[in-house]
Image 1 (tube, rainbow, N blue to C red):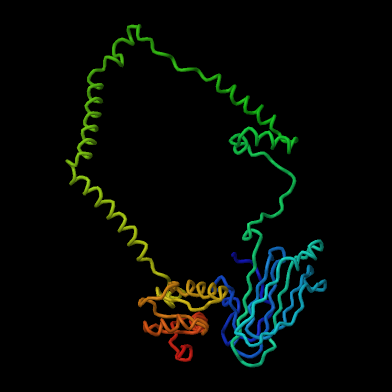
Image 2 (spheres, helix red, strand yellow):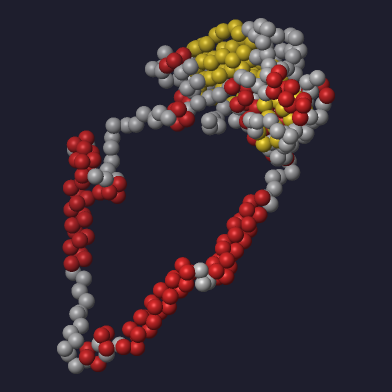
Length: 359
């Protein structure tokens, strides 16, 4: 998942001094929350980057998704106009696939607009989030033009069969000119004078021939023999102290590198310091909610683990997995609701509120 460019047109309501842009950039899940009964948000982003939109609604809401080209949005075409309702559930997930946008592909709209209006008035906490996927995330590559240029480095390093295929696909390539330029450069190398060979039969060369340098040859043989003896001694275990010294140096270097990594601290205002290295587990059975919980734990600096043990401090639950909750009570682990992570994220501090605990 990547961060795309978007613009918030309207977002109501928000608390005093709160910026919706900062809320949306906190983590990858793009979580936006409302504490009042009714709320609305309008977001504008490039249509060409949309592949799938997933909305998680915590209450009944009206959803509109449209595409437009002009700045005044006079040519707006609504692709989705639906009324979603959440009955007897904590939240509802709706997925809009890319097929809804493909029908207007030929019109080449530049932007898309997402408008969500909550119609509920029960005052409960609502969560809106969306996931926008680009073609780069899904594994498909963007369309490429038919024009092809030959890169000389990659061309000559490719197999002959591939080179023949590229030439047949692009007969207009300037390959012949490249070969001609290469031949011209090669001819320039031929003009370089070659090194004169030494004739040892001449009187000047016979003063100090290489074969007669007995002292240097003896020194080379002596160094080689010392190296062989040292290798044999190491294999026979005669230089154990030297091996231990080398091993100790390697361990010290590893410890210095590890210590330099562990001593790096996050900034004081970072979200990583909210639940710094706190062990958190989950008893939520819904895979979608589990992904959101793990992303929130990563943003807050907590360590998310699957299995329960006595080192776990908090168990995040929605009340569905009673077996894991009973196991946590026996181990003395605090059981909190999903809202606890969101409150810690909003307030940027470790919150201990009994209203967020399960009995």
